[in-house]
Length: 383
Image 1 (cartoon, rainbow, N blue to C red):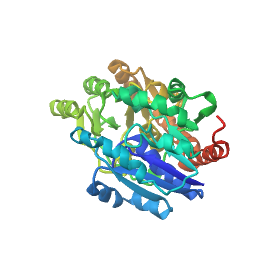
Image 2 (spheres, rainbow, N blue to C red):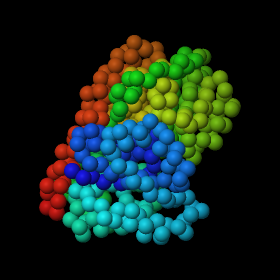
Image 3 (cartoon, rainbow, N blue to C red):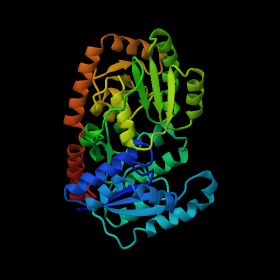
Image 4 (cartoon, helix red, strand yellow):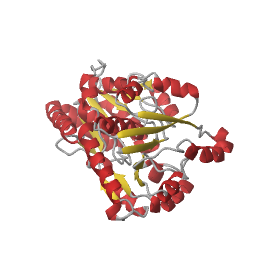
């Protein structure tokens, strides 16, 4: 099978975000399963490509036989005048190349806007992954309208759970076109990372995007309560985003309670931080299928997790402590109870680790994609 994976949202491990990690590991493991994989990537410049090319993850792809095809486009507002040229030039990068299946790792409402119609006219099977950002976080209303139109060209849609399945149905996909395949986690990588020793009793980590939808404000407010109630409490925040200034402000005002570490250079640094903490917190207000949650589960660190639907579909009450999303009081009370009975918290963490290994290890997840793509190829045009 010749497979094209279109991933223009960023490049793992340099860029932050679940879709980038999925594109990397999906390409890697499908190649190991015998598929001929081309990963179509977007870079903002030659320098950004060189930075990515120097990572162990890039070499890992090449050693597995993945072809990486670069496309250069800077989507910042200062370059908005270039958008028409990006749209015209993206299909040209693929001229003369034949694929059995084209998979869009995110909705193609950017430079790839012309690809779905083009491949449909050639009779090529196409699928798209329904990540949540465009549909509940982004202000890109035009992109959502474009995607509803593009849905008719798709042979299928990959969703991760019931939450993203509803999104797919709302976008016009029929039940017959939808396949549920969970996100995956690199269990071997996580197991091989050494924990970073952290001060604090308890020590708590949040590592992720600093955006309102991730519940960062809820976490910061709860931290002040926890700092007052638990004299050794220390929260470590790692990441970047629109709320970075707010996190810096809290850390500056409360240095004995909150430590801001900035954006860590590699995923392994993030895992090391999570493994070194007594608790990892996932405070999302909304969540599709959190890669950060999977990594924390695989780390074996006790979990404090919001009851956002996407979280409760991944971890159960026997694996994590849940609190009411958006409520600093619920978060702080839940963490205090979890700390009081830390042995129970560790038992839940071990069950979460085993669950990540059994259900979400990438070889298992990639095999599900392989079977799905093979079925699309065999039945293209039937839906």
